[in-house]
Image (cartoon, rainbow, N blue to C red; front, side):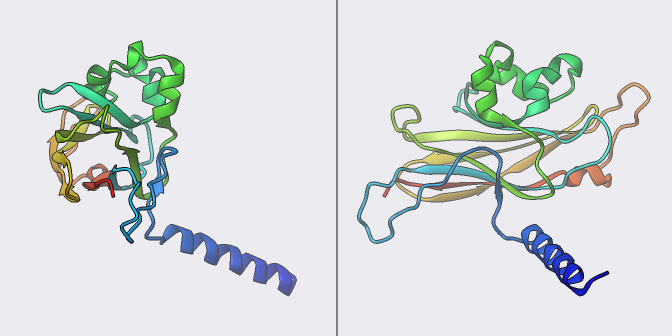
Length: 211
């Protein structure tokens, strides 16, 4: 093998490793966080991001998750992201795929353009992020609940949730997890020691107010 080819291969491997180890979370949707003017010039809208560690699993009936907001009465406000397979109709083929989000969001009645705007393919392993720019007319000041639901494998689920306050103060909230381990046909239930529980971890919401 020629030396130039070897050098190019080494450079390619290094670039892949650097990308994999980057501290910047990959964006799940086309959301671009606004650049806040720390000089106090003003005019930067508020934003909310949901960030978590994601480990892509191998095999069937896994890697499905959704991120959404609700008001304090439990009404769905906005879906920030949902994996494309489920959002695109997978819930009809496999009803254990993101059942809470499917019911809350009313995705079955959404127009295709609306589904396409909030969904995408499952990301690769690493820290991922999705978010929205806050429009006060659509999301007034107050408390909201944020959720990340994950279908780990077949009937096994996790739901992370937390309460975030939209207002004048910046806030970071770590979500709490609720696990549901259940059998499915010939598949045994997962346990807290199963590798699948690592699919979604360290969920937090970051709110930055308008400046």
